[in-house]
Length: 253
Image 1 (cartoon, rainbow, N blue to C red):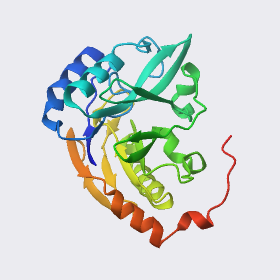
Image 2 (image 1 turned 180 degrees about the horizontal axis):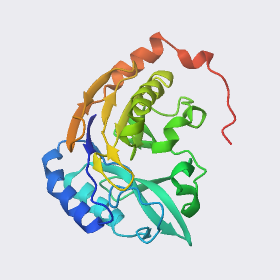
Image 3 (image 1 turned 135 degrees about the vertical axis):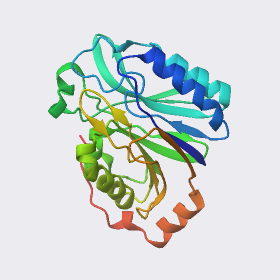
């Protein structure tokens, strides 16, 4: 499977501009099976105000459906949404046929005040697409390995983020650790640029089940990477080194 990750300098609070700029780039990657965008890709990580939370179905989701249909790829990323009088940091995985799988961020970033305006999700989600099973998480979720633990449910984690430079060492370490401990690929997608929080280094990468980087974006700039996920290699590795057989059982509630 061919996947493309966008390390994007998100224009703060301007979904029209962000969607316009992204659309101008997507045609270059029509041969990909999956495009992944960062966390809150249409606005930036705005948590102190909910004026940018899109009332479902909003603006970004129809745009994602349009792009997926036009180029015959799936497209994924998270958006601030409002539904039933609650706000969610919601991950959308949109397929070319218009079908949508949703995941609401489980672990809200209380250090940044996300929990004051947003509601947490409570459901783990697995997305099947062209022979792969994907497990979506959003930014701060990355720090919670019990929630992420692979119970033979998925083949790749998709982590979309707005992860600042000051904690980039943690990012680099944790995305590799989650790939290794879950014997899966990791699609780690972070933003670049600056916002009111600070600087973003990036660190967007495709990582294999051994924790090795297959492809990685350049630091501090907008960049895109494309790589192949090899299911045959993954199956062979899991069969040869069956870690799951010795794993602990966790209550994920």
